[in-house]
Image (cartoon, rainbow, N blue to C red; front, side, top):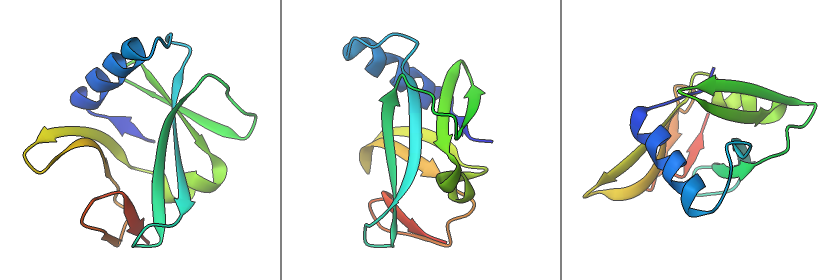
Length: 108
């Protein structure tokens, strides 16, 4: 399961509207190699659901995850911060043994 906080849900809705996307544009979360800790999160809108995707829904947001990324993301919560330490989406990932200072990469 992948979940979203209220703040993340509100920001996703605002970005959909700002970019002219409909509710058919879901959130795709994936993991790619790179970053200072070895793995990086990738977050984007996607209207295509692939046969190998796992689909989760929380607070009206559909989250698409490919099977390879799912191993790294199970139990993750997507949050949004607009505080003094930076603005953006944050991943609260119980599988990460180490994260970098910017929060965009991690290791397991």
